[in-house]
Length: 81
Image (cartoon, rainbow, N blue to C red; front, side):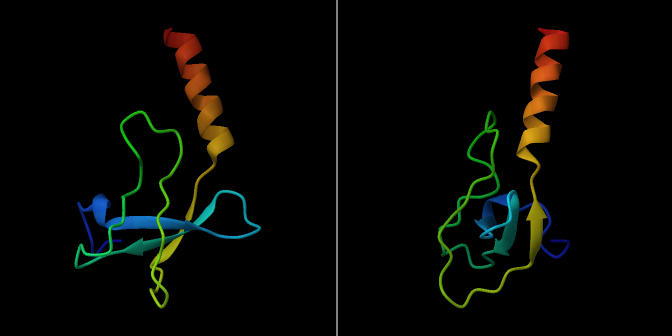
């Protein structure tokens, strides 16, 4: 990802079967594949996924601990709420 700084809209994740929270990260250098980016909006609590054309090569893997993130958000709201 270091070679693609500042352009999260051109990135996308695809789920990995049988691996909870594990995604493959792809990047669209041309901006023509319609990838939706990392998140769906400012209040999103899950990663965004898109369809990946056959033959595309993933850049790296991404692990998202949704349970841990949700617990953190709940504790934060309880403390500051």
